[in-house]
Image 1: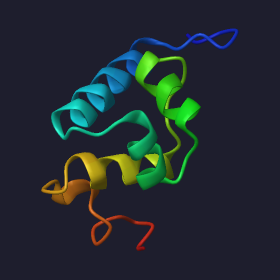
Image 2: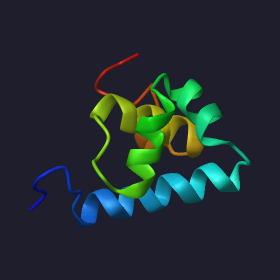
Image 3: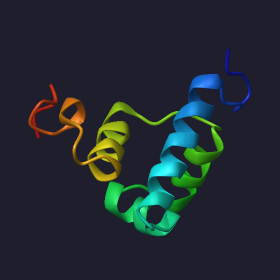
Image 4: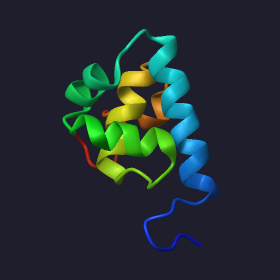
Length: 81
């Protein structure tokens, strides 16, 4: 269980996926942060596995890093953007 600002295994796994997706698309942390509408330190913390993303941020990341994923697209999101 995460304590004292430390991430857990799930946060670390999500961070690795974010990093891999970002680098595969040639994006900097700053560019990804701008696209997701978060601060660059947030992207650094997510990639390091220090904490997990909010649902809104996770959906934005999925849309940007895996645009072919229908399961996380805005059209199929219960948030209905």
